[in-house]
Image 1 (cartoon, helix red, strand yellow):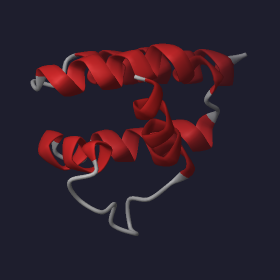
Image 2 (cartoon, rainbow, N blue to C red):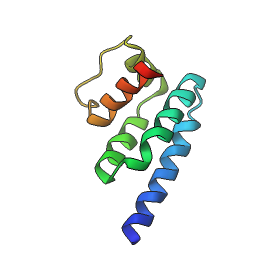
Image 3 (cartoon, rainbow, N blue to C red):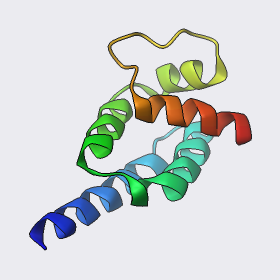
Image 4 (cartoon, rainbow, N blue to C red):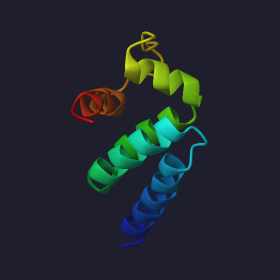
Amino acid sequence: MADDTELETRRKRLLYRSVYRGNKENDILLGQFARAHIAEFGAAELDQYESLLRAGDNDIYDWVSGKAEVPPEVDSPVLRKLLAFRVRF
């Protein structure tokens, strides 16, 4: 039960960080992505998403918009899910 509570707390924190980035485009994109997917993320996916959110807004925007290649050290299944989400966005 404690693990479920901890995961839910992390999800809420990451959703907040997704919506309030400081860059309006990323606020919208990451906010909608998090609302659509974060509830299904387990601990490993939350780790990946948290790592992604540590990147700068400009970097995330450039990766999602295709202006820059995704560096191998930040590439993850969650980032790939975000890139696929962007196509539908």
